[in-house]
Length: 508
Image 1: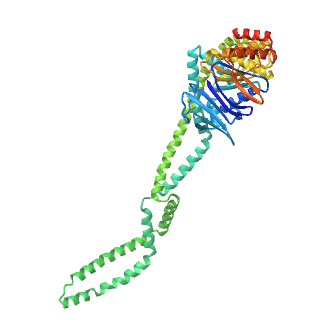
Image 2 (image 1 turned 60 degrees about the vertical axis):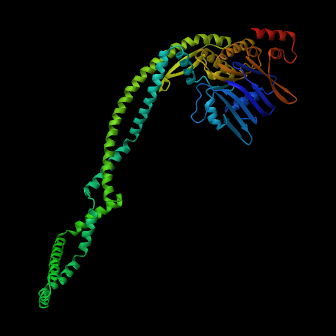
């Protein structure tokens, strides 16, 4: 609930500070005094409409279900809007966007205007019936909770299945491409280090002729071996070093001869072809190691694609079975709603009769499953639809629906009504006042009113008056209430009869 309002520099108002009581807060005053300005300024603090005051600040008792992960919220919240070059919004000193602020408070601060034709849509009507029924039937509450939980999981699984189906063609292409790449690498069957070995062979093949020529020339050294040995003998010197060297040369030359013979037997075209394939893999994957690693990864992916097929089959089975189960649950919920709708229609008929409106019937239509079940609900007014209603009639039906569900509400938050009793007859005015009084047991209600009956029901009466082009807000005491109600009845020229009637209204 709102506990205090402070406004500064609001067109007709220099400064307003007023403590607000719970229950019904009626705002009245002469035409043009600034009632709507005052109300709109309060609304602007919660992100409704445009801010006109340079400062509007409200102190709010935090609703129990108001939570935010982004803002630190105490038990009492100071919400304000500052307007200079542009409007800036704050909650307990923390800057907040208008959109986020309105999103936080819209469930707890409702504005009903005669120009607003919302609140009789199917979702709202289902919520009204469900809340009323859940307050009386714990089994129904448990059933609705189970349905919504299971439906959300069903939707997630259905989306997973639809994604798999939409990607099916892509998956087939991926499988074919993956198999092609694996087969390509495995057909080459590269080995780590093979590229270096092949390059060595290639280099040796390119030098084979030169090696043979060099070997033939170098072999002439063996022709002078005996002569050199004779020299060592004649000089009486040790020739073991020379002999070891010559033996090593024979071994080395034999190895070169063998390599040369082996190279002559190598298929050079085959080597070059192999080297080209290995080089192509290296260009594509970076190295032989990475190509082999790529094969391993792709084989795992193929297993994953096969698992997707299994997942698809399992998901299809789950979705079919869960849809059938949800249909059964939704049907039970719908039957309970239909029975309770008939229960609600009885008191509604009485309230609407007081409001000079025809009785309404809840009409159920069956739709595809959604979070609310299988129902779509709309209202029939003795053969007419809500589209034919005037703004005032629409608001009064909405009011009657709220009253009939009031027993299922613990804390309705703040309800701001814009001249809901304007242009109605005396009997209708009394009915509206009585209904708003009932709502004020669970809502804090702000209501601009021109009718004496609603003003007489107020827990707090704020008078907006204007003198010398400046408006002021006054909290009326009993004497002030009598005078203001008498003014509403008789106009500016109050008479004893109006005053007497005002006193009687306040004691009723």
